[in-house]
Length: 181
Ligand SMILES: [Zn+2]
Image 1 (cartoon, rainbow, N blue to C red):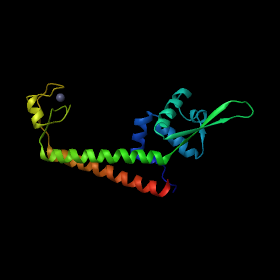
Image 2 (tube, helix red, strand yellow):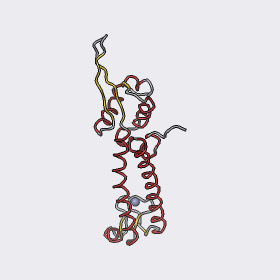
Image 3 (cartoon, protein in one colour):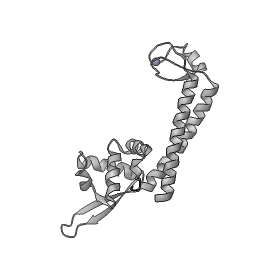
């Protein structure tokens, strides 16, 4: 079995999509599998995108420090070409940072919900604590339907499960980072 690559983590794919667009995870996979610097034209052969679209993704990733380029001059043609590399370490670093904040936020919300009744409509447009729902006279401000107390036990359970899964994946990524990056 080979070493798991950074793009194999589900949180990595979500994160890359968010910062680089729908094709960013696939682009990172192509670069990682290549194992050495790659030109945007070469990436273009493997993705159903125009070269300008590939450059847009690369620039977005470059902005976050995820992609780095090197400019080289072809001695025969005199043309410049750019070769790109992905920093798996930077990806891991950004995700670990972001997920630590996300976990704290979810844990705070979980704590809050344990002490407060949450109200929503049957379409689940938005969640409101009792005080806010009462201000709206228990009518959803978005769709106008009646708002009722949500199933607190189920919500807390789901939230805790979500946080648990997130923590597991973060722990795996941390271990991976320490060992391979
Ligand atoms: Zn509603």
